Image 1 (tube, helix red, strand yellow):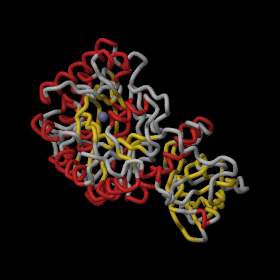
Image 2 (cartoon, rainbow, N blue to C red):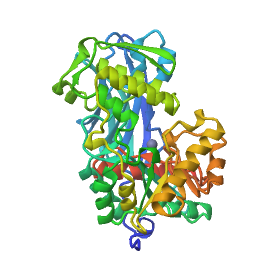
Image 3 (spheres, rainbow, N blue to C red):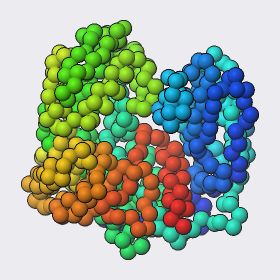
Image 4 (cartoon, helix red, strand yellow):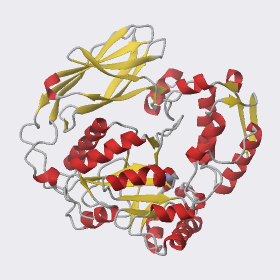
Length: 481
Ligand SMILES: [Zn+2]
């Protein structure tokens, strides 16, 4: 395979997308009787965006009723809405007595360009009261005297999990197949797509092309073979798939999916939950959410972990997730057994949520295009394990893959992006050449090949995907300057 469009982003004279400069971000004076506090974290004065849009994020704590939304208007037209529902522990710590302070953050993406001049941010209370909140002034072109440095490396590694259309997705793991095809089409046309191994090599010798993008998948869902592979092949996009080897051929689901199946899918559950989980008693009352209808579940579909839970089912899901996350794999298996028993649920995976079988894992590899890497055996948070147990998780997942592929895997992804200072060394000892985190930034020139950051891709349409990627690349070329 060749990569004919390589370097196109660097050498073609046509500007990729309009360059926007954020000339001023100012908060409007507000009546303290309406708003207890608020701030815009993004964008920042003096920053630039090469995208056809802006990421806008901040928080607003309303007086009295905590419910509301942020509206983004450009040229008097509504361009985006973001509810006040994102968890903001920083604000909560400050306004600790106010329960609304925990979920008062907002974040959104708006398509806007320099020609729009200004983006106005209003906070709108659920009863309709509109509070002018902030103004973001846009100009075209880079800030005077500081052109973006195109000689510097700057690349990003994308993190996907699943290509699927599912009914609830608290962790934003699924990208709709049609959106994934748009995203891959955009990668092919506008970016320099490289295999992960090349990111490592070229970062090490300083030759990584600006605009280089590598694609990765975590966990080993069966849809990586049935839905992702054909699209990757169609657009000739190289990718690395990190497989949780303990889940290969498993009849059940990964534990976070099982939690979703038990709590977030329509059906009846007992009224009270009172189980020992990880040696501690876990109690919850489902109240009116004992029976959960299809219509209600459909309305709750956009809910994401870290956002204000719309009902008791989501509250219990969140509390259980926190508790299960901190258990070891045996404790978690026991807890899942008792939860399943409590719910009267079976163990069989939903076809939409099953993981790869070993023969499918082998089939997923495509020489020169799709490569498998390791993701431990049981998907633990490695920093919570002693070094010996970490070594076993790492080594056993490498040898399980070696049995299937007849070669040692050379790349690794840290489950939950979690590790301690000894983990990279254990990977080196096990023969891994590169490893990826979930750090959410672009690649710095001197990046450690065993700690390469990644950016999670959500279910974005092609245009939003392109906008967010170019914005990230602009950021990473600035920060490396
Ligand atoms: Zn994972």
